[in-house]
Image (cartoon, helix red, strand yellow):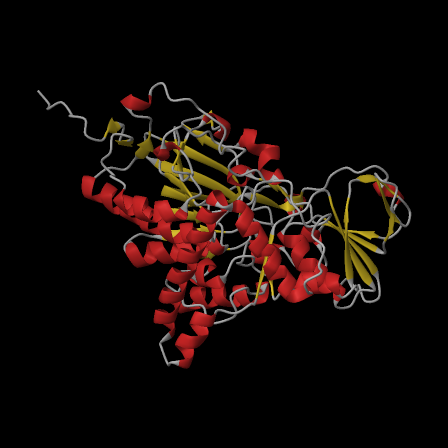
Length: 511
């Protein structure tokens, strides 16, 4: 649903109250809804979703071969066993999410087709007022004591597309991968894919199945991990008759252990890991595969996400001659394709930029606190989930180096524990604020460029909340540390303010 699809607003008829409002019915929102009703069964809630169905990312993207780039044993929820192949199609993921919704009675709580147009906090009432509009122009007002933001981090409607010279000259089909129409026929066509990240690694082998030829044009190479799309441990446990919940728990733990070991090795022995990645690719292409020009990245391994290639399918397409790679920049588009800066002409019937997305901070929704507009870039993040000056709000932002959903489960535990704690204290407002020892702490960009620097983040990092130089005031992207730290968070720590009083502070007795 595009922003222009909405009718002119009409007057709001009623205001509906819930204890908690969850924004977004994607992988984060559905998981958070499960945790809320499981751990806080007495809380009323609704999920507001701008699309006409659930799914988020997996509903937005419809390009050929769309699949996860995280294994589903960790990308799936901890409470719902995954029984398919580790790298799954969008269709399989949507089926999994639908089962979660149906098995747990979440569907009646979801309000589809509700585009949020404003969120405002009133300290006197200790309430959020959320205004949403439906396609018929009706405006619906909701109030809630707590706002759980699960809308993701990118713009689902306007992908990032560079303004290359001569784009208007091209006579063929030019469509960003995010806007791909599944009805498009590419059989026997020459397809040019621009980009080399996880999306490109997905569409290249998918296009190669029916296209005359596929060319992947990249500015610079990416690190890829090629491996069979299966989990030997899961297969052995199933063969032994072990129940699926146990398989899910054990395999999930094993994968996370292995991922942690890989992360550490990328830091401590990066050259050895790179050689192992090459060996894994050669297992699919043969020993003579050439990495020198097109598959030798310029950045330190793990500075950007490591793209998984199941069954080495992209490399098999390249080795078979069905796909080729060009490492260069675009000088201009032409009527028949593009001309690169080195003068090479690449002809194409269809050009598919896989150039990423625009960062969307809090869904680009206007927020205000007591009448003052919130500028997220002026806030300080608390563990990547709460923000100074913005009460009663938590934001799910997952991991880049591990499955996004691991943090959905983690924050599900934290938020429900916080809600219980507020009930125990008899308070209606919680806010995060720097402690006395944080008074001179610098406010820095959301993440260090040398730590993680994908283009989509660097382009808009100035719009993101700031981080401090202490662990509490940053999103450290380290699941293996946070899985122990989050359950131990002291909700009576001095960074917490309840009803305006700092936790641990003495309140004067009435005279």
